[in-house]
Image (cartoon, rainbow, N blue to C red; front, side, top):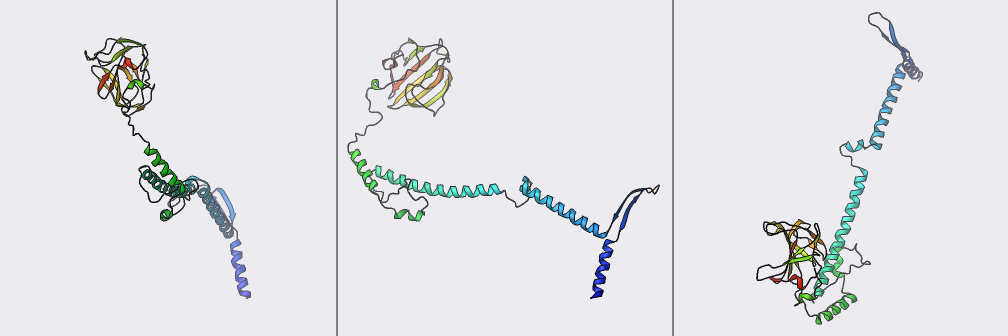
Amino acid sequence: MEEKQSKKRRIFKKLKNKYRLVILNDSTFEERFSYRLSPLNIFISFLIGMLLIISLVVVIIVFTPLRESIPGYTDVNLRRDLTAMVLKTDSLERVIELNNQYLNNVNMILKGEDPGELIDTTVNADLTASPNNIASIRKSKEDSLLREYVQREDSYSLNLSKDSPSDISNLLFFTPLSGSISNQFNAKEKHYGIDVVAKKNEAVKAILNGTVIFAEWTVETGYVIQIQHDYNLTSIYKHNSVLLKKVGDVVKPGEAIAIVGNSGELTTGPHLHFELWKNGVAQDPSQYINF
């Protein structure tokens, strides 16, 4: 027992033995640097240095964006956002599925057919229910009342189409361009519209709701825009300097669609050539629109 203790004391004493690290000039043997150390001091210094390096690496990984460059490491915020997106997507899929079936049932009711089962997607509906439980939802009292109302309304329906007005004079047209008429409508001379002279850079406006079906440059009439309206009506605007709409655009009455101009070969000055057609027959615009 005493031998073991004495051996430990000798080892500990060796660790505490002092040594001197001296750096000399190789030519003059002049002492440049000296430092007293021991094996114990070297071990402790090495251990402290390693702890400092490890602490620095941990701080960099935890508190800086550098951690995202480590293979296999995912940003915490990204994981949280992805989880939230997955949950929202799942909820939206269920809502869309219920709404689609509800709309299909309503569509069948409006057609006078029996949907069999109606899905209630009101605010109080259980949107978290499993799709397998949809079949268990039965017709409601409101469903029966809705079908009775639709059938009652259909029995009085006159089934009027958009072509029902036989006289377009009953329609309210918006003036496409305010000015003086320089050339009247004359079908015999194949002048299927009227020419309206106005101030430079005046806006040309749509006469009714409609959809642009033509908006291009032509050699004879310059920039032309054509709009298809309800009741098989078509309006044409020619000799514009600029077109403000393109094919497929939906326009409203009074909405600017072009700028009056003097484009094309068949023109003698800035004006708008305006045509109004119904069922493929040219109409005299001055009979329906006050310029």
